[in-house]
Amino acid sequence: MNGATEQDGKPIPRVLIVGGGVAAVEAMLALRDLAGDRLEVRVFAPRRDFVYRPLAVGEPFGTAQILRFDLGRLAEDCGASFEAASIAAVDPEAREARTHDGATISYDYLILASGVQLLWPFPGATVFWGVADEAGIEHTLRGLREGELRRVAFSLPDGCSWALPVYELALLADAELSKAGVEGAHLMVVTPEEAPLKVFGTQASADLSALLAARGIEVVAGAHPVKFEQGILSIAPGGEGAVDAVVSLPR
Image 1: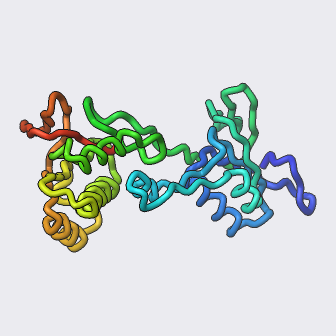
Image 2 (image 1 turned 90 degrees about the horizontal axis):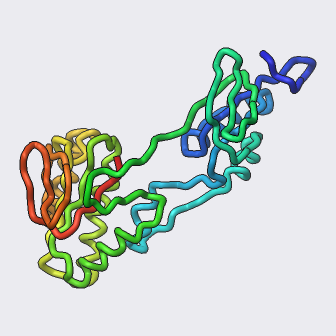
Image 3 (image 1 turned 90 degrees about the vertical axis):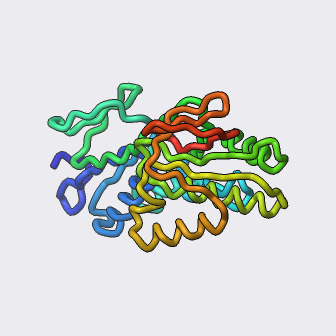
């Protein structure tokens, strides 16, 4: 160990957590529970706030609000320290990390919880980012309510492993149309999955399929959205369909 702080004459191991998402927060909580004050925990993340993403789906519909928590306060509650800085490089042999500003941080143990990079899914799509400005989603909903949009596809692109939000968006959009008394709109879900939410098991997939069918939401499974251009959604394997708008999750 190369910890500088001592407890009972022994160095306290230093743990560096890189990231400010749910994995980083869970790591802080777990270390606090398992080791208490026997570790010195430092958290580095570029953002000062922890965003609870699951509620983001309901925000454009006015049914939920994204929850944000101060990472410094969360770290303090876990007996850790927080710094708003990005880690640019790690030297595992020297057990040192370097920030973008050139500062060097020594550690004994390293937890990388940097998450994923969200990418644009395909040309022409309105993207539901989950935490960013959702003006595009609100514009699509307004178009459905006012009858300007009649056919809207909600799509799951390649490289997206968490499909639940696309079904939540479609079901919430349908509920919004019912509340507004709008008839004649057609909603569909385009997904590479063999069946809706098959990752949750056969029964859950069957239940969701039945719910979507009862709501009149079409499911196009085994389809990879490629592009949306001039009112045509192209999918692979070869196929296309006429829609007025496409809402997609990011890759």
